[in-house]
Image (cartoon, rainbow, N blue to C red; front, top):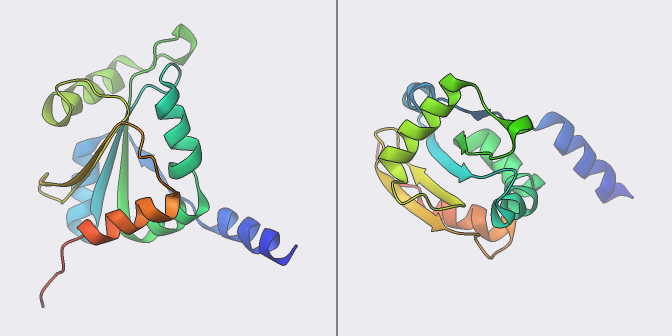
Length: 146
């Protein structure tokens, strides 16, 4: 019961925002010195994308880590008419895919620095726990010398 209460508190106070604009994300990353995690997803048709979101990206372990360490960008490519994005968002997502996902892989998740250098990528569903996913992000994070 105590663990459930703590998890509930963490989920209430840990809020993360998924941006849809990579340019905005890089500006924020430069200011905050955080890395950018980009997730290419087909939110309403791609089973592994839906599973990744539910099991990893919405897991408390990941959201707690991301809140302090990452700028998050989701490039979603839904197919159902009811889930269609604005023309502006479609254009942003397509430009991001041209730059980082020209082969159209789904799901495809990449960790980049503020300059767009790819530090780590996950091609397909990362068949691991949220804890292990966070460990991989942490291991790929460059050590900043002062």
